[in-house]
Image (cartoon, rainbow, N blue to C red; front, top):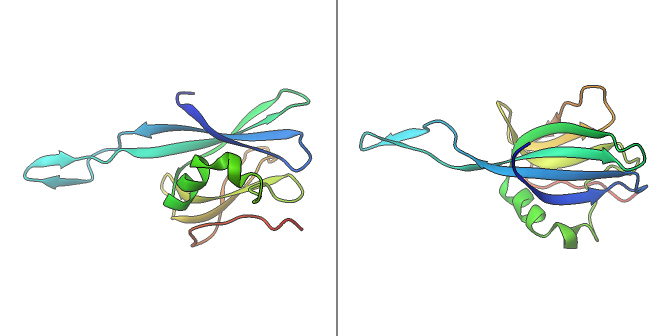
Length: 132
């Protein structure tokens, strides 16, 4: 996959490493100004998970992160000390953004599902798991 690793997060038990690959994409024209097509480059990120015991790697979901999640990605090493994107059982990840053709808001993706699909939880700008 093309792009750069932007951030990574260890699961609570240390068996899995979730990481985000990101790239700037050029979507189609979103409007016209003076007859010229105006385009907006957007950051798209994809969740990946690697099982460090079996070396199995999985691609989970791709989305456009919202502003709060971009901020979290920029300082992931500091936020990893105090917040949890992994559920306490180490099975799911939470994030905020907009998937292709989806609604902006809070999503949860089950990293162990046979065919992982992000589940829309509801509108929201920022989400993390409780430590308990």
